[in-house]
Length: 193
Image 1: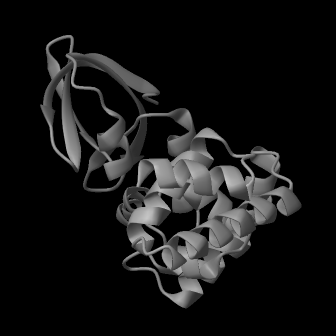
Image 2: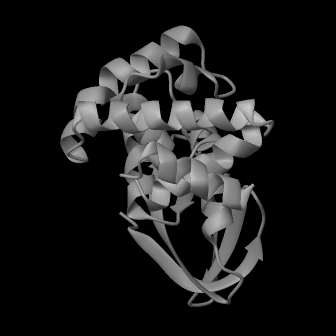
């Protein structure tokens, strides 16, 4: 019903924003990923998802249509509500969620607070085919880049860097250059650590 909201940013918190649009302040729930993407300027446009329940109407805001699409796919899974989907998109980037599902990485999905092994398996089972089809992902290429990521992370760990810190840097590199080879990933990571 409401595709996006564009207006003046009135309030910005890690979990929500208020956008003044034509004199009406819209309260939008957001993920930490969207929070990190919001520029500190007055005019803001967020893509939205309106959730209508018996006792409430809740607006969710997203910095990109891709994040909104991942959110909608997640809430279509039995056992995943809007707050769990938002937590997933706060813990991982939309690309990480998408690729985790595409390669069947149960451990990655299960690493999110509130998701157990069965729910993680259900998310992958229900969404893997949709994600591969919608994003036209070749399973083999995703596995290859994941292998490069894993090898790069273990190399950086051997060099004495903390895994969490290394993972953030490597994920950023892979989001900018998805086809980067192992050597390139490690070189760029060393520059940014």
